[in-house]
Amino acid sequence: MAVNNSGYQRNSNVSLVARSIWEHKTISRVDLARELGLYRSTVTNIISFLIEKGIVEEGEAVSSSSHSGRKAITLSLNREFGCVFGFDIQPSHFRAVILSIDGSELWRISTVLKSDNLIGMIDEAMELALKERDRIGIPLLAASFSIPGVIDSNGVVKYSWPFRCSLVDVKSHVEKKYGFPVHVENDANAAAWFDINSSNLEKGDNALTVVADYHDEDSDVGIGVGFATIIDGEVYHGSHSAAGEFVSLSWKAGMNNQSGLDVGMLRNPAEDDNAWKIWMMDTFKSIIPLLSVMDFSKVILHGMPYSDKNRVVDFFENDLRDFLAILERTECELVIDTHQGFVSSLGAALYALQKMFKIPSLDDDSASFANHWEKIVDLSLKQRNNG
Image 1: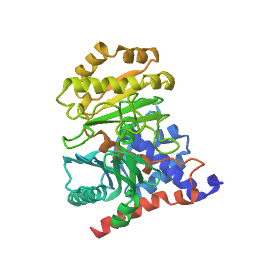
Image 2 (image 1 turned 90 degrees about the vertical axis):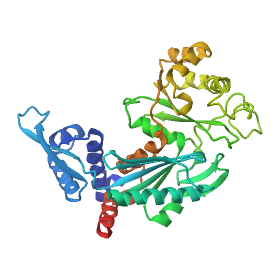
Image 3 (image 1 turned 60 degrees about the vertical axis):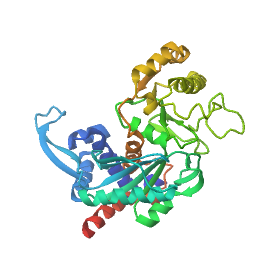
Image 4 (image 1 turned 30 degrees about the vertical axis):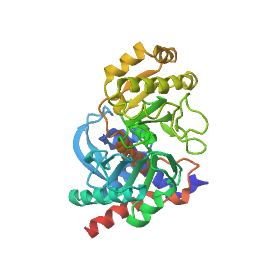
């Protein structure tokens, strides 16, 4: 069994300790041992390894929660050890961030990529971010992509309607060309990873993340929306990796868009208030049955169509009170995020960190996880030696 594999067990304990430091930002050895239920000697050995490899650094001496009266040395992740890229790639825009291993934001950009196809945009994104990585001088540990469409667990874009492409193996392409670990997520799922790692959610919350955006005037969509389901702190992907791929009640068989609404009417909902209201009605009336059966704690709205909170609240109060009624009936809170335009790029980067600090389960492959942290250390060290 996996638990009898010493390498697997050691890396599991390292992940347990490293993740706790990541979540707390700063914590002492004593408090780590108490919180994780590990022997102090075990924690001491793991911390020695993490400090030796440059992953963790010691800080100031502070009062410990042990009530012993002694000062305890705080521990935190060393942001110079490594970073991750988070990309949100859409046909009409591009947003990217670089986060250090402790989650601190080092860089962000919002621009338009020149390429007219998905792989070309991905290569542009990597080259742009790698130049910035060279400037800040921190090793890259993983690149993570947020892309609209159905993304399978192997990092293959099974289908993306906005990009008009199918069966694009993003993960293999980037790993082969650039040599870094790669993660690929649907854009709404990436936003859900942001919610999981932010103050939008509390421990134990199950939630529905909604991400909407306007497309450029050349698009035949006008406006698009994606959904992601969060259950027990994880994003639910579904049996075919297509959970959250939305069609409204107005959609009919044979239609390529998300709804049966007139495409011409939806050309410019950002400026046409009536078009925006029609789209809002079609979208949120369609998810009322879902809210009645899923028992969510929160529904979280992200994106430009929801940027004016008062406008959104007025719409629900005056035009779709049934939506507010189902929220009240199910004791579900509505959260409107009016500030985070980088939600999917940040979520993609946080997803990479989630995977890095993952605590394996018995279902995970023990052989592949046995040298998990050794691989991370080697990747960081190799770049430092070459740079």
